[in-house]
Length: 191
Image (cartoon, rainbow, N blue to C red):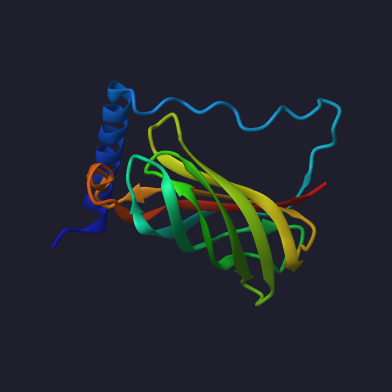
């Protein structure tokens, strides 16, 4: 039986190998910046909640390959500990949702809706647009931004980041990756 600890380094190595192969083949180019820089005199937003340490699983239908194509997805995760302007919020016990868009193994975008259930039992409904890109380390990551549409922190801005580590990244070249797992972080801010 293989332990999770020994499987993760091989998965990370496989993802980096896949990224190197994509770069060498000219199939991936770094994405251009997606947002303009904020004016320097703009006030920094206030962080209502930040949960920098979590995990998430994303499932895809159909499985994603190198070429982005219409894809449905679902995600589930959690994050703790959290720090908050509300001292009773200490964890995002669950972060779940669904979305759809054009996705590939190392690029794409999608829109999603979701629910955060906080450790207090309060919930936040979120809606966000996401972009899949590669970090400098070669790990695919999704970054989603949008509003909290209902519940706790309604009207605030929501950001989620999820690393997309497939169990077998070489499926990107064949039948497609149907599930990824990785580190996740959640932040809620207001102006």
